Image (cartoon, rainbow, N blue to C red):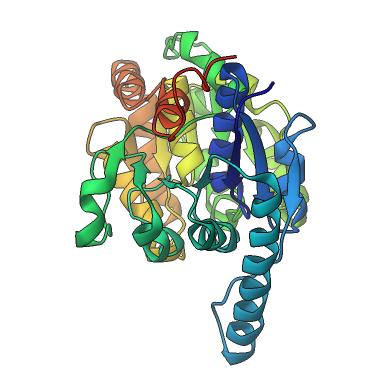
Length: 367
């Protein structure tokens, strides 16, 4: 590839890194050369893979007590100088920031050097980092048609394009959804996201055990749990006679998503985009401590269209989960309708639309 370099600023959780990787794939097919500028956490390097050049800079969250604010601010300042040296050497045509504190130094350095900046927001609420950086952006690409928290002076910059998904999930767009009927097995996929979900470990085993015996016998459960919870969750399902596989990590998430009849999960940005791409119904339990409660906003956007059922964690009880699951699984037509509604939320051209927002000419964007 001889096209221009595009620097992708992302780090932290998969919610920021997965769309960056999806954009990198789209760029590589069209000629520009993506590089990832991230913090030192290992997850970035696992997600990036071997095809995407990765550069480390200093970055640390400035949230918390005075010592964390001091050390975080110092790390971000150091990261800005490191990013400036790196960008001056790479001379990228543009920088794309994906939010999170790990993106801040690179976007600030890009502004310092006069480079074009495009921001991408994955959630239905503009994140704190992107709110801070919005003034530097030429364009703010959003995943939702309505995104709260965009500064008044920057609203004209927004373009709703969706949230790019990784290639292995994008292939699920061709997978049909068939709800379970009669005595067919019912496949439940339960994930906790990078924040974990102890509430699922605590509440789901007794909630599923309380389902009617005929429905309980049809369940085939795949549940992601924290490592310290795997043994007790496995034992709880064994005691109630439920066919369940419990693990702290599933390496074949695309296959499991394709076979799932219903997901039970958090409402992080990547999760929401992947549910939409696969066209699968879900019960969403937003992580209550997410910044600006953005997961609740994501979940409401899906529930309002009929694509999901929303349960708040705070007042959640075993019987609430049991009742919700019994209603959903007892209504195949309702599951099919929710799956269809989820697919209508998909933006299959999100990565390509994000490429089109970059300030590179048509010739430069072709291989």
